[in-house]
Amino acid sequence: MGKAFNVGLAVFAAIGSFLFGYDSGVMTDVIASNNFLDFFNTTPTSPIIGAINSTFNGGAVFGALFGGVIMDKYGRRKTIGIGAFICTVGAILQAAAFHLAMILVGRIVAGFSIGLLSMSVPVYQSECAHPSIRGLIVGIAQQMIGVGFIVSTWVGYGSGQVSDSSSFQWRFPLSFQAVPAALLCVGMLWLPESPRHLIAIGRLDEGMAILRRLHYDGSNEDWIQSEFHEIKMTIDAEKENTASGWLVMFQVPQWRRRLALATLVQVFTQFTGINVIGYYQTIMYKALGFTGGKELLVAGIYNCVGPLANLIFITLLIDRIGRKRPMIYGIVAISIALICEGAINSQNVDGTRQGFSIAGVFFLFCVTVIFSLSFGPVSWTYMSEVLPYQIRSKGAAFATGIGNWLVSTFWAQVSPTALGSLGWKFYFLFVAWNLLITLPCLIFLFKETNGLSLEEIDLLFGDRALGHLNNDLAKDQVVDKEVATNYDDKSVTV
Image 1 (cartoon, rainbow, N blue to C red):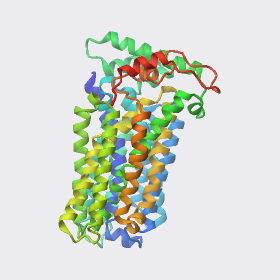
Image 2 (cartoon, rainbow, N blue to C red):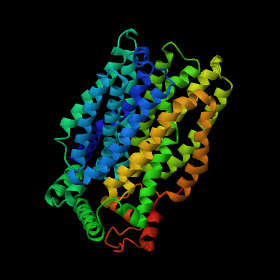
Image 3 (cartoon, helix red, strand yellow):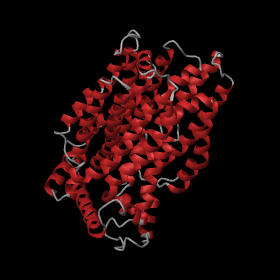
Image 4 (cartoon, one colour):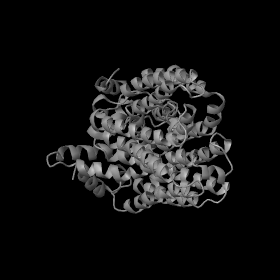
């Protein structure tokens, strides 16, 4: 079946990413619902709204970490199915909420499921992808996150046209996500397991069959055989030379570094400010003078722009120009857009200057376009491919849970208050972090991984992919500099 099956598998699994985008974006419209605000006796900038969003993110922290516990035991496929089932339950709890505690519990359950899905889907896609199109395959996850935001916005916008006296304004958008969640839960029963996981648990014939099903094009049998033996050799060496558990990620210097990079790319993604805009853009548009339902319309258009840019990037660019350069150029461009946004807002505090208001919307749109051409797809791709197999599940859980969701929880909680008290000055917090911390780290710490197999990336970081790891995990290990240098020479430099 080859490439077509590989892409189809990635798209269906990415329904989990769609749920990520939908459940994250749906609250943008829900908190703009007058019926919702009256029902829970709150306002858009209150700590209650921050709590509703932050409990979702807090649940995602634990969901992601839980994925690290079960993924190696039950496999990538079943982990995604479990996440989809929990998401269905969370959707029902949210839609049926009749007091604040119930919706908070529903958000926690939904967040738990999204945390689980957000770390397992990219790992599953990455392990199933051919090296030459891994950026495209994992980039589909970000694409579906964007599609989820689009659908949530327009479902919310349509529901918002109902009378303020009806709870349909917010109950229907919250319940809608149960449909794709149930579809994913059932559909994963028919998708294959990751070939690397099958090989790791000794089901070699099945692993070879899935590898051929994913990548055979009628003329690359030698590559299939070589890839199978390289995967098996790498995994066997890891099992022989390493211990199980979470501590091993921190005991091996090379792995510690790779875990740090996987986590940092998630932290840096959050500090672009993209989720703050996604959660609270209606508040931002109101500050720019867009009221009376116009803020929802602008939010709907905003959520369409990013996925379009992402689609162009993952289909045409990511596997050509790599991972490192887009992030470097992206963080500079995002910082410039945020500087312009803050400056414009400082001259239009009451939102009455129409020209400045339009310019403010334009630069917020610039942020999502630039993000979709850089950190959006690259962050998930880089995180999933930079981790070695032995720690890939737990490493992705840690990077996603701590680097993404824990940081996102913080911003979700403080942003409504910060937007209300700091106003335009809030944007410059992100600018300072991006230019003083993110940019230097990207330039000096990150390696290019484009075009290499997951096992070749082990060599890029000086790992023992072919059995060269020091057995003493308590001591620092000597990097195989010759091998690492050879692969560095093949990487793309800035």
